[in-house]
Length: 143
Length: 296
Image (cartoon, rainbow over all chains, first blue to last red; front, side, top):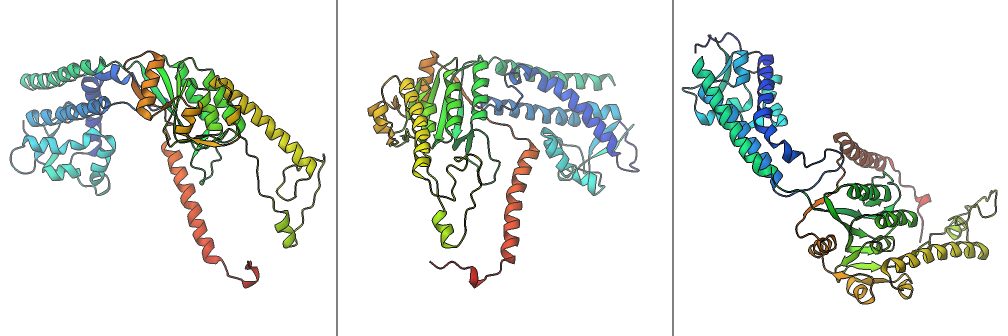
């Protein structure tokens, strides 16, 4: 895969659309199998306190969600959403390592965390999220 | 390109398989047979006052709503009323009592620190009552006392201008002393409420408790001896008794809680802090004036 020379950071809308596509896929392959489990809990004004199972389920979903992005970005440099928008992940240093893929995607287990992580892009007009800075990765356009 | 699709397929496939297998494990967990805890904490009232100082209140509408939810949920096999209340309004207490009596599954009352007066009335309607040795319960009586300021007002030259249509319209007003006739009228009404309360408790407990319906409160250990409660114990005992009454061996315990919206939580905190900010500002403007100091 050849990457264009970076002229400008990847447009924010591309990253958002790629993320939304990936979220749909993650819901289908990771969250949807647990639908019967979640079906036990009514979604009205009543909140039921339950045992440790729900924490276990949320933990499993979180791990698998991170793995979805981390594995695809490590082996292919892009998730499915990124592939459709033709954008890639690369390391700002040498070769992209697996730990970098894990760290940069830690905020994807929760939308609020991701928004906080993305404040750098939104307000400082930077092209990297905080975790991308920490993991020394960036998202670029590609051919 | 083909190898790229193959890699995507393999990775996504493996993740889906792991998710599917783990979900199968969790989906098969049996969530039926629940025992629900319904909390009755604070003064029993018919509707909340929304004041910032009235945090601990158990509204009859709220409790009844939860009882009805438990009634209509087939997976709930028993209800435990977690009571920590000194009682409250007679009508509100009675409303909850009737709702408890109308339940189609066992109800166990678990009295914690206090389950007295109206709260004990509610407990008496349940199938079994559990309390700790040191819990305070009983107090089967009616309180209608109030502060009367006529003397204090007279001392400072404040008068009560009585303008009524119907001579008992201001019956129980704090601004005037009760006449003998008015006292008798009020006392009669209190006695009526007391009689209804006491008779209903005796009927619920299936024993004559009129001897103990003099307003006296009892510790749990005393209440057990005289038959006001059934068991001494705590939460575990309440669960054990619930399972026995519901004839189930295993059950999950759940609670009903009102899910507060983000905006109602924000509103509550803003109300509280606005009050204290206003108080702070007004304190700063207060001028100390010797003329208004009350000498005792």
